[in-house]
Image (cartoon, rainbow, N blue to C red; front, side):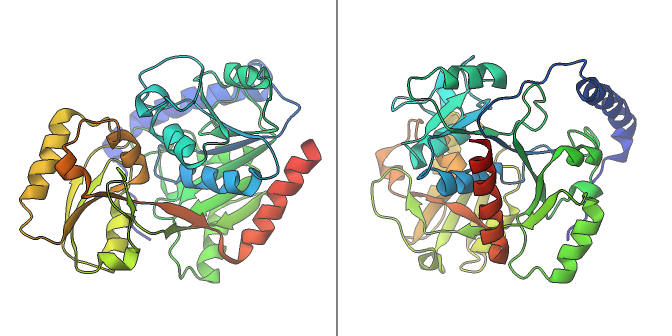
Length: 353
């Protein structure tokens, strides 16, 4: 497990931030700030850190589990979008109107409802007003949005930056103290290596200090076959990346895992890294094109994440470049505990409905 970097010079600001968060949570705990409950299953997928835990792949896991049995809606604030208020995604939506992650989900699951609203209560109200309202609502990144009380809360903790080794913003990446985990029903340690031992799992569970009524799971990313972003050509098996020259373009919180995965197939990797949820500009497309043209090989391609692909598809990109741009989809696996996890989720939904 890698060392977690803490900026100790900023710790005094973290203490001040922590005091404000403590007061806010106390106001909710004591009922001074109103929390609203609902009569349908509302499952929150969130974290207590700033990004990098894999919320979207875990949300997609829940969609796959539930979509054939129930009318499912995903409600997100739509981080990075250029619109305001409530929007229900349709065939004309793009990453600018609803945000990159909701757009990615809508593309992959066109038959479910995807909505965005910074005010989750207003978003739920609008969803329930639809002629054919959802039976289950998945709240994306709403663990700190305490105005809504989910019927089930799932919190993710990055294996490579566990919450118990982190510090509050701005010195670290915690949105709230680790004590906030007590509100979670399920805590998933995400992005685990494939060979995680039972001893390592026990150590993590001890450090998380969960209560008897809380469930702990471990998930790993599964990298799937490479897909053409613009449909200009066919995708390829991930094994076909062997010895290819790759320009890796990422605008995510932690691209290191992708690089480690690609290194199993090729060491010919050049990277252009942007901040998480980065809104690509025309100048960035030019930078990517120039960097790609400098790679002296005929056997080369541009590889991006699904989230970055959701933003790039709306950019003005040369037709000659589009055929070289591919994305690397991911899903999550909960290993041997997958059946137990699925049963918990399905039993919860059935009990609320």
